[in-house]
Length: 422
Image (cartoon, rainbow, N blue to C red):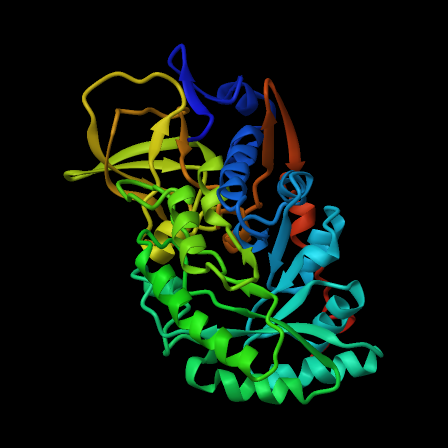
C-alpha cells in the first residue's frame, strides 16, 4: 500500500496535491511519501520480530540522506557498496555498528574508511579482497569483522541484469570454495570472522529461490561451526520484488515466515538488506507534457523527463505505470511517452494505452522510488531534478534542482587552451 491517491479527481501524495508542488518547484521532480516509507519499513521489520535481526536498508536503491534518516529513525541499519554510501549513511546519522559493506570492488581507501568508522562487517567477495582487508586492518592496528558472501548458484528467476546468485555472475565466493576460504580467513591476523552472507538478485517474485539459497547455507554453517568458526550473523541480502504492473510478489510477512521456518535453530542474528521493496512504491517521477505529435499511426507524448532521469525503461525494458495528475476524460489511445534526449532509446513507455493528454498536462510515473534518482545522470547536459519529500500536508525539497552553473563547477579549461597554444 502507498499513499498516492486521487482526491476530487487530482492525484495527491498523502494530503497535498501534486499540482501544488508543481506550481512551486516546476517539473520534472521525484516525490517521496514519508508515510509510505515508514509503513513499508515497519511492515518488513515487524515481520521478523520473532527472531534477532537487523534490517539494513540497501542504500543503492535510493541514497538521499533524508530517505536514509527515515529508516535510521525507525532503528534500521544500512547496507552500503561504496565509500560514498558510507559517508551518506554516517551523514544521515546511522550507527556504524549497524552498517554492512557489500560489493565486489572495494578500494583500499574505502576499506580503511570503513574500518576506522567501526562498521558491523564487510561482506567479502573474493580471495584478493580478503587479503586487502586483512592488510588494511593490520595497518589500522585492529581486526576487521567479516563474512564471506557465498554464491549459492541459485536461479532467482529475475531479469539477468539484476541476477547476482548464479555461477556466471561476478558476485561472491563460489559455494564449493567457501569452506577453504573461511579456513584461510581464520588464519589471517587482521580478520575476525563473524558471519556468512548471500544475495541472489533483485525484483524476485517467488519465495523458492530464497528458500533454496538458505538451505544451501544451513549445511555450510554447520560445517563451519564444526571447524570451530563462530558464525553469529546470517546476512540473507535483499531482492524481494514489488508490483510494477501485474507482478504478485510475496508479502514481507510470507517472506519472513519462510525464512524464519528454514533458519530455525541456526542461532544467528539475521541481517536483511531490503531496498526496492521499501522505497520502490514510495516514490514517483512527476513530469510535464511538452508536446504531442502523430507520425502515421504512431502517437507520441513528449515530456520533460527523460532516460537520464529514469533509465530503467530504456535499460531493462521496465514497466512503470503512468497516469495524468489531473482528471482526464476521453477515449484512451495507444501512446509512446518519450523524452527530449537525442536517442531513440529515450522513452518512459512504449505502446501504452493512456487517456488523451495535451501540452502542459502533468503526468506521474509510478513506482519510481527505487533506482530512479540514484541511476540518473547529466546526459545531454540535462540538469538533474529535485527530490521532494511529503509529510502529511507539507512538502520539503530534500535535493535542489541543479543549475547550469553546477554542470561545470568541477571542470576547468587548461591555460594552454585559453592562450590558444598548439
